[in-house]
Image (tube, rainbow, N blue to C red):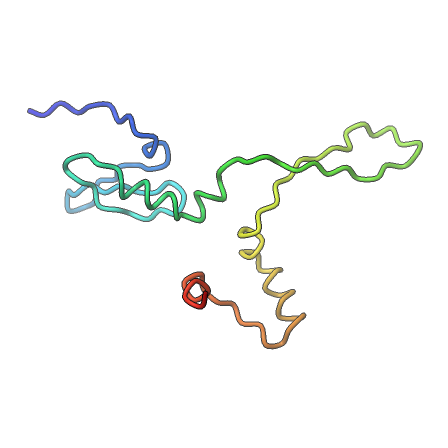
Length: 121
């Protein structure tokens, strides 16, 4: 009988072990729901590599926010004028309005995949 040890790797905060219908176990990313094969020896290198490249995981990481100070009227009683927000260059491209804006700005705009852009460089 094998004793299951506590999972100590930080990848298990971002991954979940899922049991499939055929009885096999796979590691599932909590962000993009991709299932990766689970090694019997317990190594987590493939999960770490996936998380390093997972766009949804990168977007969920907390970073330093930027302050936005809107101009206030001289006699305003509103004291909560500070808002925090985080600008994410990769996240803005995911919005449908960005694609619509680009199509209006350029009639020849075609959305390309990340792999195509990387291959062109």
